[in-house]
Length: 233
Ligand SMILES: [Zn+2]
Ligand SMILES: [Zn+2]
Image (cartoon, rainbow, N blue to C red):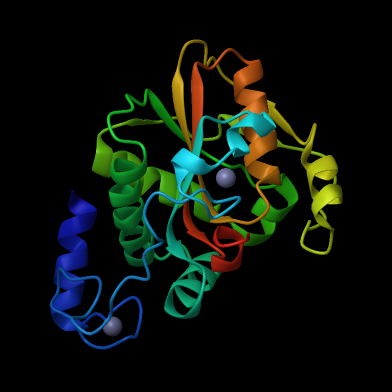
C-alpha cells in the first residue's frame, strides 16, 4: 500500500505516460484514450486457430487442460513486453496482468484456481537480468484475482542457451526434463503464467512437471501470442 501511495505522489510531480504510446495520462491510468489493447480473438485454440469446439488439439495429449493468451504479440504489445524484459516496470506489468485477468475469466470461466505460478527463468539468465518478467506478471495477476501466488514453484536447469534458434521439434525435446518441481501441488488446480506463448514447448514441459507432481489440472495463461500461431490452418 505504501508503494501505491508513493507511486501516486511521484506521478503528481512527474506525469506518467501511457504504457503503450507514452502520451501523458491521468495519474491512475495505464493506457491513454487513443490506445486500444490488441486483444486476441475470443475462444480460439492457440495451436490450430479453430474455435475450441471444433479443435482436436486436446487429443494431442497436452499436459495442460487449457491455454490462452490475452493479446497479440505485435506492435505496441510487443514493445511493452520487450520493455518489461529490460526493466521490472510495475505499470507495464499491471497493464498486462489486467488484460490477462480479463482473458482468464473469458477463457477459463469458473475454474477454481488454487495457485498461480510462473514459468521459471534459467538461474544464469535470472542473475544477468535480475528479475523474471513472468514472475512479475504472475504476482500482479494473483493480486487482481485474489489467488495465492506460489513463486518459484518450478525451477529451470540444463543449458542456459536460448531456444529461439531451435526448430519446433528440437524445442520440445530441449524443454523436456528442463524443469523440476519444488513444492506440493497435489490436488491443486494451477494457473501457469508466462509472457509470450510460442510453440507451446515450455508450457507443455512445465505442465507435465506439475501434473507429474499430482496437480489436478494445469492451465496456461500468457500475456501474448503470435497471431500467426493462433491462425495457422
Ligand atoms: Zn497511448
Ligand atoms: Zn486446436
